[in-house]
Length: 168
Image (cartoon, rainbow, N blue to C red; front, side):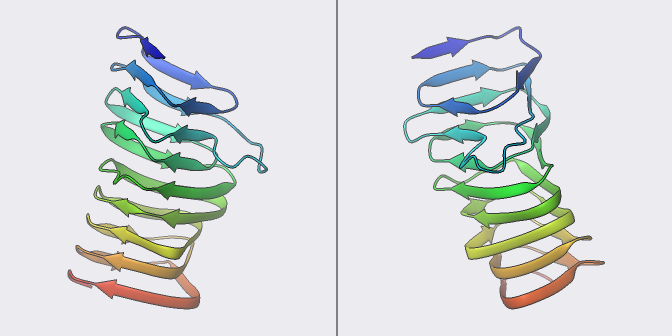
């Protein structure tokens, strides 16, 4: 199916948002408030699905799955208890992670990435193509940094493998 809401300014999701068709709210920002740690994805764009949102700060408080097409200019803030962020399609939006739990990053991200708080792991080899700033929280896992990366105030813990193509 398809849903178009060009005049909506906020897409407020109280539990889960699953997109398998087309959801276009080209002037809206996403505010997802799922606090159920048992959910696999609080926001999921399935293969063949398309999610188009407006420019702004999009807030996601649960896991995020991306297999379709995402147009979300601005920035995604991952907040809350954490979860898995898994993508089979590259995400070009800037990302801030400021969680109280653990965020497991999987896939390819080409926007600016900032770890501000919480635990970030990348057990399946996250690829961060844009600049990265890790200024808080704890970091561990396998990560490919294809651009400049700055560590300042982040604790590196556990088994870590960092591949860097930019300035360190």
